[in-house]
Image (tube, rainbow, N blue to C red):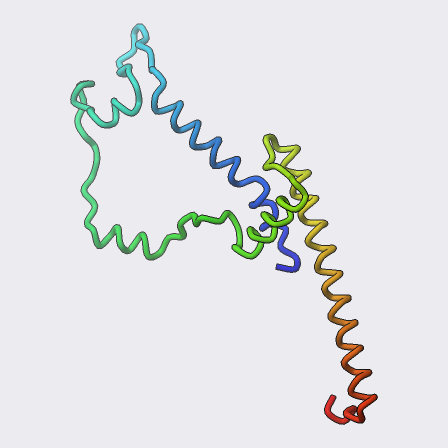
Length: 153
């Protein structure tokens, strides 16, 4: 997690990209393909054309796939999870955004700004944590020397 810029990038931008892709799919599947002159291609809505090919003078080209082949594919594929990155990165970024009252980006420039902010914030927190660990380790060492326990360390 210490140097995972990909996690921050995914957190800052992936949900927006997925929303955009879902919208493109919806618009494409529902748009009307107009008839054209001198063309043998059918016209209509892609979703309807796919689901009812006989209405358009063609056959159904779908193939039967045995369930065991589907199970094999599922076992060997990675599916998108609830979180666009590691859960720890997701939780940390969500906490930072809530603490700083930041919103999800609406364009690539805001996404880059959010990524840089989160990355710098996480790096600063890690540096502070390393400093605290060194400080506590030093204090523990001093205590053990004071009590004559320096042989244990």
